[in-house]
Image 1 (cartoon, rainbow, N blue to C red):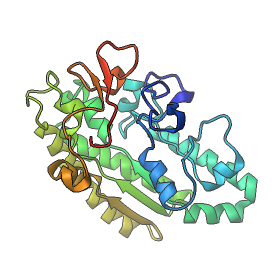
Image 2 (image 1 turned 90 degrees about the horizontal axis):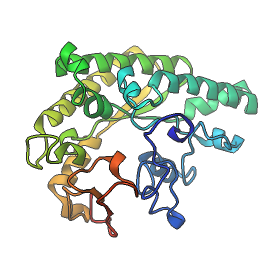
Image 3 (image 1 turned 90 degrees about the vertical axis):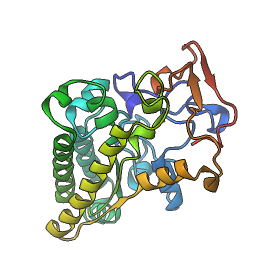
Image 4 (image 1 turned 45 degrees about the vertical axis):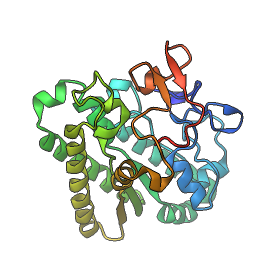
Length: 285
């Protein structure tokens, strides 16, 4: 969706998309598919999940699922403002607009069935810490990490309640990974850990995920008919980092796109000096 708004947070240039057919960038900030693409393929629905804002979206795309997400966004509106991406409240407005469109295509009754049977996936929370809280002074000057986490989860809960009101009944929340082990956070010069995982970021992730589990437990009791779960992405990534060979991985602390001493996505492009895209990235996390 970021390809269709005014933002620099894009993946529509090489080396992004290098593992797609012909190596064509698709706007996904990845060498290939995103988590959402694997979900729809695994469910036997389609190969890729298209962005909702794509101007050539077809009726069958709407009826089988679309992506409302925006890379770089967060629960905190300030997070989305930093990179000028789509805030979550606007994504929910787009979902409501989507609801009207499918009603127009198949009628109210069938549209209600589609929404009741649909699974909404949320992958959010990381940017509020790594793009916002740990990079800019505004929120740290106002809140401690636990206070900020509580605010984020209150916002999250409000969004889930709003979606439930308009027909969403199956929701999966992906928890945040070990943030301090992200390469951008481990890079020398960005923290004092000399390439090791940044523990303050990891502690923030644990606190957020603990609160997320409590939030989900409360929502199950408060909203009849809501089927909501958390998926432990943090546990998976942590296990891969600790036991890489079990997953066929070899390298846990190097980027597939090297830009000198830095591993920031924005620097990974053909115009940045020292950018090196590794040929074989299958052994990297």
